[in-house]
Image 1 (cartoon, helix red, strand yellow):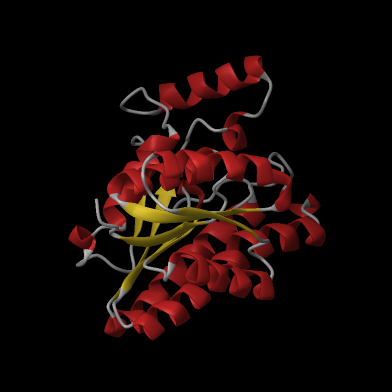
Image 2 (cartoon, one colour):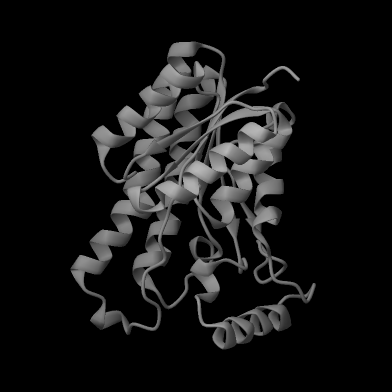
Length: 254
């Protein structure tokens, strides 16, 4: 099957990012994947899995909060796969929960904002530069959260995800004339290590809590988010831009 284009997924070594990368490969995209060096082996196996689907793939180690690394990452994707049509700025961190507001340190605030807000900004920026140069439009997709729609008692995390919504809207206003749409997904509870952790007993309790809160009595899985990103990356989404789309099992209604 001819390639639909070239996609880059950041934070792809596990969880939502991994599911998105595999889904885009199934959709017919050649897929470059990114994460930090500590997750290099996971990226290697992901590249192999994508290639087994008959799609080209490449691994790109970079810290998305560092401008030169993001620039080199995008340049590397272009050199290796031939261009960039879809940027999925998925990489992010949650930070510690349960910290009283007055006890959130400036160091913790800065760490979360660097990765969750500066990271998407840099990914959007360098993806846009490349897409404008190519002259064939594109899709830029970011990761917001239910916490970017209705704040949680985690000021640093919520602020970072609200910021992604503003960034997405602003970029959409400017890039539309180039045929580039800019949107974000805003997941609720998704069954990943980021949400449930490694402790099995605690993980089961967390899953039960969110299932009870959901009108559907479900907790999300990474493939649910990947299904939405698949549509956002497609030609069929051409009339949608500037949106942060909730996908949360009914935990929060827009």
